[in-house]
Length: 175
Image (cartoon, rainbow, N blue to C red):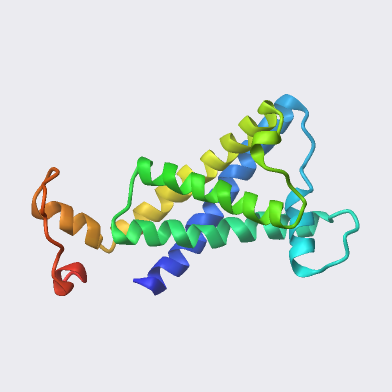
């Protein structure tokens, strides 16, 4: 499962990066907001690179690289049975949190509660586009392998039941 989750997650995360970039470009045309240099500067600080103005290549490397890497987590979620829009919404929160950890740890960013509300809304909107797109792709790829262990467990007794025991190890592995 983990080998599949790795390559499928990188693919799903890259697809999410493309969708997020398209939504950002459309929003920037409407609002006139300039490109952010935060991803590139964050990467430069994380790697110890010189902190001159972040070149476009560094921005893109961090933007796409982090999106692809986080896609692996969403793929793991899909493979274990955490699929659908609710799982994508949960993942979106994790993606936002990952950004904030890196940006705040490096001093490039500030906690979101200190941001102007319009900037916060824009960031959440674009990360939601990323999270939902990544989820759709990850879920579709994982579905090719059948239901995940969590889905097999839920299928034993549909609905919520107290004291529903776990699957056997063989059942969890789909055997």
